[in-house]
Image: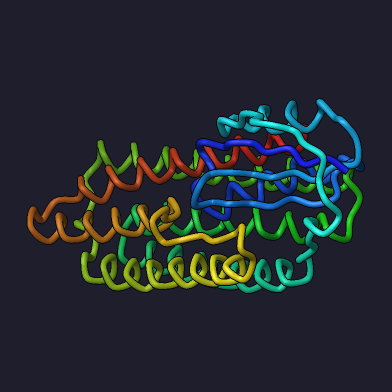
Amino acid sequence: MFKTEFSVSKMDCPSEETLIRMKLEGLSSIKSLVFDIENRKLTVFHSEENGEIEKHLKELNLGAKRKETIVAKADEIKDNTSVQSKLLWTVLIINFAFFIIEITTGFISKSMGLVADSLDMLADALVYGLSLWAVSSTVLRKKKVARLSGYFQLALALIGLIEVIRRFISFEEVPDFQTMIIVSVLALIANSVCLYLLQKSKSKEAHMKASMIFTSNDIIINTGVILAGILVLVTQSKYPDLIIGTIVFLIVVRGALRILKLGK
């Protein structure tokens, strides 16, 4: 049994971990994956020398670099699949619930920031859902679902960007800043709970100590929408909301393109 360590410079949150798991799921030589998000490190336990592992990781464009490959001890391999599945279901439900809440309140309050943030929540729910699907599905079916989800997410993001452009050049009412701030604060709390649950599970393993130093993109986005709401209040202008909406839609596009890569 071999143990290969990779540094993954762009692995900042559980979403990247899920993408990596999905990408490597079809390689039969892999026996276990150990993620250290705090130190941006991935350890792969595999039965034979396999250059496909590094190749698959580099295709995700997360800055993966192989550090070393050594012979592993049998007692080093740990399987926590059942625990991870339970947590994935938890964060999937939280993310999808807030997708519904944010997209509804976003349209009611005329806030593109909330609508964009809702699509980011949906993107995370899709990633977690695809990971759960992969547990009991064939690689071929997983790739088909990944492509469908990626195209769906990309289409929603592009429609959102078109709507942002339309609102930039036309007369629109100033969005309801109170709804923007309140809902975004709740979403921030929800994302923090998701991150806490995932990190708490990993903290049970000595090599999986994760901390709150590296927060997910979702938490940054929630903070951005809150700031946009405050700026809408101060300036009485629609533009802070449209600017943050544009940024978030572009982040969603990037996530969709990553998912589409899994379908290749």
